Image (cartoon, rainbow, N blue to C red; front, side, top):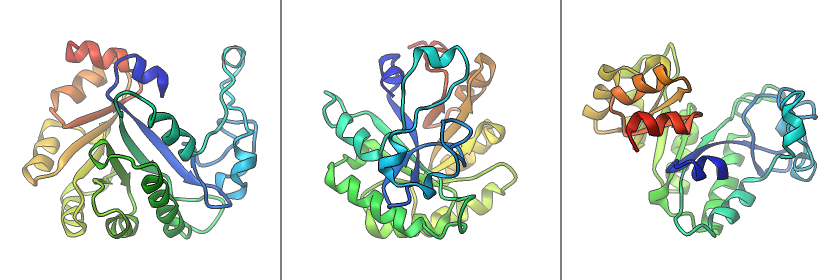
Length: 231
């Protein structure tokens, strides 16, 4: 996160999962095996064990990094000290391949809401997004002032997503680069939602995302995005 902000990003997108003892953790992949020295899923271990797990980037890379998993509260405590609060997009990863599908989503919402209240995260700098509509409905009740985003995945019908988003009362539609066309973005914005695009890394893909004129872009290659934006 610090690297992205130092490179000039306005904020960061963060993947959130729930530990065995209901602590929101920052982690992307479905299993711990793919990115750490651990095994199983985030949901199968308590936070105290998870924060001891080193990330595993492969031979060579690991010689120059010593990062470990952290909790959402650790991140919120850190950014609260920044002179300017960054934009935070919290992407909820709720599909648990080691347990029941979405069974812990209500607990994730409660824990997330408690952390956001505790650290007084400014709503205008926050977006919580997910593909799971029941979670968005619960978030609407728990955190009525916080902007929410419905992620529409590849293969889903955008018009259906817009109708669902309108019924729930979210503020943004989040679209992968595979669906990111000027026409799709215009359709989202015409429906009075912010259009958030994600997934670009190469110069070409980032140029294509920028050319669609969204309201926000999430990319891994911050320097390339800034060059494309001429910032």
